[in-house]
Structure formats: C-alpha cells, structure tokens
Image (cartoon, rainbow over the protein chains, first blue to last red):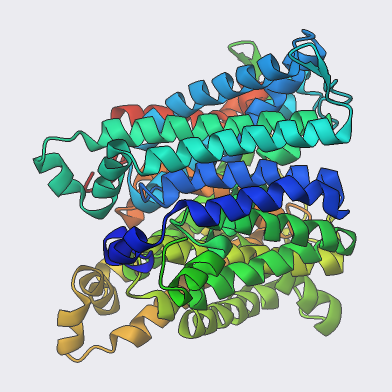
Length: 323
Length: 295
C-alpha cells in the first residue's frame, strides 16, 4: 500500500512553499455556500455524513495501513444508539449523537482489540466477520425494529434553542459536526501521534525497535476511527430520521472503501471528494436498481487496476503539491 | 432414548445433517480460498460470486440447453473455472507486485459486478432447481429419514475434498504447487511455468466454488445473493482454521457446519452468529487459527 501513496517526505519541500490550509479553506468555502446553490440539502447532508465516515476510515487505512472491512458496524450501531436515545429516551440531539459516538467507541475497542491480533488481509476478514455478526444481532433484537428500522426519529432542538427541523439550521449543524471531525483528524495526522502511526505503517519492526508499541497505537487509531464513524452514523440517523439495517450491512463497508479508493487513499481531501462522488452516483442511479452495484463494482476494478491514486491523488501529482 | 437434553433425537439428527451439508459447502469454499491464497496471495472475495455463478450455470444449462444435473456437475465447474482463469490472466495478474489488499479490493469489485448483473436480470427472489430424479426420495433408517440428495451432497463433497487434498499433498503437481508458494523464482528456474501454474490454480479454486454452487442448486433457491451471504461465513471459517493447511480447511469447514447445526437445535437465536462467536474465541486463544502454521 505504501508505495502507491505519495509519501509526505517526497512532497515536503513543495509543501513548505504552499501552505496546507489553502485547499481546506476552498473546501470549507464551497461547503458553506453549497446550500444556497439550489442543490437538494438532504443530499448534501448525506454526502457530509459519508464524508466524515470516509475521513474516519481513511485515518485507519491511509495512515495506519489497516483495511477494516467492517466499519459499517460503527456507523450503523451509532445510528441505532442515537435514534433510540432521541426517540425513546427523548434526549436532545447533541447528547444523542454523543451517546452514539460513545457506543461506537466502545464497539471499536472490542472489535479493535480482537482484530489487531491478525494483520493484513486477515485483519480485513476478522472485521468483516464481526460486523456481520452485529448485523444478524440487529436483525433479530427487538429494539431495532428489524427490517423496518427505527423510524420517525425526532430531530429536536439543538441546545434546546435551535429548531433542527429547519433545513438550513440542520445543514449547518451537520456541517459543524463534519468540520469538527475533519479538523480533528487533520490535526491528529500532523501530530507526533500521526507520525508514529505512519512509522508503524511503513516499517513496523523498526517502530518496535525505536521503543513504540505498535499494537497500542493501532488500537488507539482504531477506537478513534470507530468513534468518528459513529459520529457520522448518529448524525445521519437524525438527518434521515431513520436508523436501519442498510447502514450496518457489509455493502456500506464496501461503499466507504470505494469512496476512499476513488477520492485518493491517504490524502486529506480524497475521502471528502470520494464521498460526494459515490453518494451522487448512488442518488442518481437509484432508480436503476441493481445497476448501482454493477457500476460500483466496475469502478472498484478500474480504480484498483489503473487509478490507484484516486482523484485527489492524481490532481496532487499534476499540481506537484499535496492536497 | 427419544430425547437428548430435552431435544427429540430426530430433530437433533435432522439438524446435524443440515449442519453437515452446510459444512460441506464451507469446506469446499474455504479449500478453494486456501489454494488460491497459497499461490496467488490473494484473498478471493469473488469466491462467493463464483459459487453463485456455478449454481446459475447449472440452471442456465437446464433451462436453455436441456443439460441435466449430471451434465451440469461436469460442465458448470469447467466453464466457471475457465472464466476464472481468464479473470486471473487479464486482471489479477496485474496486481502481482502490489500489497495483497489490492487483490482483495479488486475481487470485491468483481463480486459486486457479478452479483449486480445477476440481480438485474433475475431479481432477488431466485429460481428453483429440481433435483435429479435418481436422487429424490430417501432412506428410512428407523431412527430418522435420510433424504437421498442430502446424503449425496455430504459424500460427494467429502470425495472432492479428499481428492483435492490428495492432489496437493501427494502428487508431483501438488509438490510443484507447494514449492511455488514457498519460492516462485526458484521453481521457475527449474523450468516450471509458474505463471501458467498460477492461472491454473486460480481456475481450479474457482472451479471448486462453482462445483459447490451446482451441488447447492437443488438444496437452496438459485439466487444472486446466495454467495455473498455465504462468503463472509467462509471468511470466519478461514480465520478459525488458519489458512495454513488444506486439511485444516476441510476439518474446520465440516466442524463449524456441525456446530452451527447443533446451535440451531439448542439455542436457535444464536445459530446465525455462533460461527462468529467461535471466531472471536479462537482469536483470543490462538490468533493464528487452529491449524495455522505461523502467527
């Protein structure tokens, strides 16, 4: 995996000339203006939720080199937890999402502790299997509503004041959560902690010889990634007022991998771009039924064979600067 | 002696048989995965899709060419195996030098592609496939009724597994295979055409999956999703067994089928998840898997 991602070292001299914050500022500007452009706001919010999900996933795959194939478990579980807290317990939206995030973090701790005992593709298989186990659990347990899911989840009032049933307030609430998560990940990746993660990815035995405990760092990254995926899932449950089995299904785990592959693995903006492309694709192809799967499958194959850097990776190569 | 722990013996034996049948499929699929992984270092996510294709090919052959079950049992694995070899030659081969994760992602995309196409054409409900007349009916054993087809599935898959084990562990071809997994460059230097061996191996593994698909066609409905649900369970089986040995795949496959069957009798709610629970326990105790050679 390492040889395919543009290494920070090679790009470092240019990075010093071009401040990192410019592409991010462009992204933030576009996202603030987006709801006024006439694009359907629910689509934008869905894309933002998946963008945060993809960024959380990228923290693991792009910076630690761990391919989790079961991340829908955290996304979907947090959705159920948030929906249940908001609907049955009547908790305010911000607390409900925090609760969902916490639940996802706990699951992340359990799954991560089990999965990091195996490496590489075994790691992928273990996470996938554990996620499928959770899927069957949610299918059978009564509180999730089985095939129907938890419906009519109230969005409530933010901090008891701001009515989230108003589209624009809801959009900026979702945007704030996304940006919070995005900047947190950005900060982490460029911190000493992030450097250790990259060191573990590049050369684990060497990291050990330097006195780091790779498993320890991997687990922390896994829990953080699970928690942020949970924040995304909880937010999506409030936006759609629905938590359902779709979000726990392995197809969702596959979709998030596609987003990163398409956007650009190991880049900070890639997951966001990938998420918008894939969500748009699913939206516009929805009436074509299973053709979505065929198209996604084909994009997977094409990306892996010829386009491993993804949109942002290629763009960054053309511009000769990291994005 | 008609109940065991409060469960009627007939129900117990019936579920045990269902477990053995599921175990046959687990064993054949994890066997193919192990062979492919051994030589290509690719986790073939498309394995489930090839299993589905096997079942569909049998159905096509019957529907459009009038080829019966016995013909399909030979033709379908051959056809799907050849298609697999073609996929290896054109697509998977290009990923040789990359991280194995890319192989997983490529075959995952392939699986989505195949499943999506079939789902477009045949919907989600699936098609029935009549079992061959000579295998209908069953044997009254006194303590239980044994459907003939189910007995056939178990015996036949044991034979196939045994034959695969024999070929890989006891023949010259098998020794080339095993040597090539250890050191492809050296084996190549001895004049063995390793790329062709790799293609043939992928075809063989995929053919095994298709054979399991044909066997499954009369038991389950022939549906586009039949492979995608199974493949994840088979992954769990592979993690439990540890992809080290051929024998490990066979034994673990059957054993987990039986465990699943028994759970269905004593605690049906857990029957979908028991294999994953076993996986979690095995990971805690022996991360390399029960038959795994290295950690």
